[in-house]
Length: 370
Picture 1 (cartoon, rainbow, N blue to C red):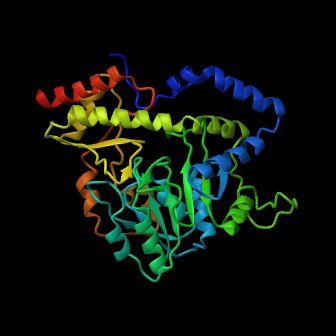
Picture 2: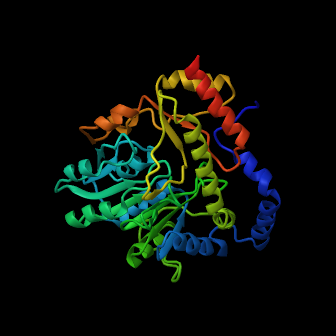
Picture 3: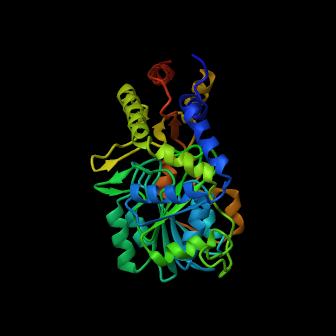
């Protein structure tokens, strides 16, 4: 078997190269390569897809989180609750404001934020909650919003990994004051560069973030009204994202097919525990994360047999060296301790072939039968 890479961006281009090059020609021919008409069109499409009123395209989901926390009023020394297991950007957006991340444990069966621990860690200093939908799964949206309303704390949804997912009938991207989406090339809905968006139903938040993304400029009057940033989405990436959004549902279906092939093929291997596919949640499997005995040995074995895997995530967030120089709280994170040394992510993307999935399943089974 040839090398099976974790990501399939080369195959994406092979599948859609003619359409992609047509989009490139169309955008570059009108010359407005930043904040062209394609950006507003995509903002409306992605907001509608997630059942939101407004979308603001920005340079990355990291920027989306940062701007959303500013819009929520988070300031220096405020506390912000965030899951202790996620990509580092879920927390650097807090630290960048001089605020204090307070890490919440996860349910070791679902990898998602433990909502009981979340509520127990609220204090008078808590000014926001960054609620992370991890690996393509969805948090209990109504439950998180209820906690936020009970304590009068705004919710910022970090939906970087889970667009297209649902909890009951609620779509990921519809939670709280703001939802932040990533269009990083690794995501299911991906740009061919960095990209992100803030989604909100609050008109004041929409206007504020729309100004902040380009130096605080009011685009109607031309006046610079506040200090801002320079974090915009190019017209080309917006056009490509609109094109990709039209295909997202079929890509999600393929992710779910591959996940089922893994779960069916490995269900009887006692050394493995498959991810939960809960009946009230539509999991889109941005990542296929299983628990594996001798995780590091299995990872090496698969690499030796031309299968690229990854670990999401080897450390709790507070264990990253970066945070040693900042204030944070990390208490009672037993769920994370249970899983961080055993999680392993197998390849899953729409261009993975059935025979490649079967090969991966066979090689995993072979490792445990040696």
